[in-house]
Structure formats: structure tokens, C-alpha cells
Length: 260
Ligand code: SAH
Image (cartoon, rainbow, N blue to C red; front, side):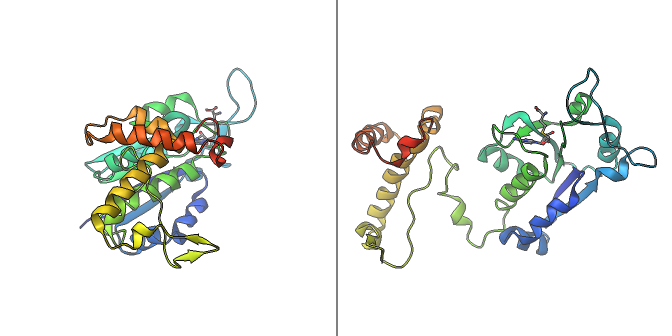
């Protein structure tokens, strides 16, 4: 099986050393499930100083990445048949789990990382998609790129020991994952719910589904209201029950996050 290819254009290739210390992701590299090529923007810089940035036209703070080095770096990359180019920018579409799943069936993702005040507007046309990892501003696109590489790699067959762990997890459907427990049975007076040690798998599945819904309503009701619930005709009943549950729980710690 051929590897999934990540090609990253960056001024800070060293930032990607983190990938070599990320557990299952590092193993995916070792097993050749992924291949990561770093294209150092500095090598495509201009003149003896290998200049990659310049002052913005019209004035203003900071430096902007010049278009020529990014174009040259981009053109040096061998494109595979199923390839997409992502531009890291806080002005992009906010990354969702379904984007990672959508890209995981490609052969190659090319990621362009900005730095400083950003990049010359004329590189936007290189990108198939502009992606933000959230409504905040980081100093460069490297951490967003690592997030994408990490999130996508764990979806590739062979990366996780047990692929079932992908099925129930948060953001896979419009529901957050149910609460999880491991040994010991009692920890600091907190006991694992009886149902989980009952051995009744049908009841356990029902309990988990109920908890997933309660938890999603409690923390991220936007996920449920944005989703289409054809998958479960009973969901309205459970949502009503869960709304009552939330009423009972007003005053819990989630009140400190009024936007949740
Ligand atoms: N002045 C720019 C922000 C520059 S931040 C603006 O207002 O839009 C510098 C670089 O960091 C960006 O070019 C981008 O590549 C990266 N970056 C910062 N925050 C990001 C985010 N939330 N998502 C993705 N990339 C981000």
C-alpha cells in the first residue's frame, strides 16, 4: 500500500519535529503509512539573503510573505493524482472532523503555512481550500498544519490499533462521546456507574447513547441544532428528557462558559 503524502511549505521545518514524538502518529511514519516532506521556504528565498518577506504596500505593521518563494516552492512539489492544497489562515473555513475524513481518501495534501502578518494575497489561488483551526490567531501555520497531519493520520487504516475507537468518538457524528471509565472501580469516593459493570451490552449501549446526547446538549447544543437527525427517530424524545436533565443541572460548572 502506498503512503499518504503530506508536503508542507514552511519557514520553520523544525517545528515538525514534534511529529516524531506523537505516539501513534510517529508509528504511522515508521510504518510508512504516511510520508511527510518539508519544503523549507527559505531555500526558495530571493537574493543572497534568501529574502522571503517584505513590508506591506500601503503601510502597516509587520512583514508579509512574498509570493515568488511560495510559488517556487509549490511548483517544486510533485503532485499526485488525488491531491489537495490547503492554505493555513485564520480567515479560512474552520476545520471539522468531516474535512479530515473527506481528505483521508486522497493521495496527497499540500499545506502552505503563513508567518508574520500573513502572505501576499496573490498566493490564495494556489489553494483548493483555506483552513482555519479556530477563531484565534497564532504566529504561524505550523501548529495548524501539525493538527491536520495528526487528525488525518489517525483516520488512516493501520494507524490505530483498534479502528473501532474511531466509531463512537466526539465529532464523528453530531454527538460528543459518552463518559469513559477505567479501573479502579472507586476512585476518591467516585464510583463507576453500575450499568458499565452490569455486563448487559444492550443496556450499556443505550446508556452511552443517552449520555452522549445529554453531554452534547449540555456543552455543545449547537452541534445538535446544526445536524440532521434522520439517523435516529427517537432522538427528539431523548432530547426532551435531556433538556429536563439540564434544567436540573443548572448551576453546574458549565455555567461559567455562557457560549457553550
Ligand atoms: N494578519 C493575518 C494573520 C496572520 S497570522 C490575518 O489577520 O488574517 C500568521 C499566519 O499564521 C497566517 O498566515 C496563518 O498561516 C497562520 N495562522 C494563524 N492563526 C491561524 C488559524 N487560526 N488557523 C490557521 N492558520 C493560522
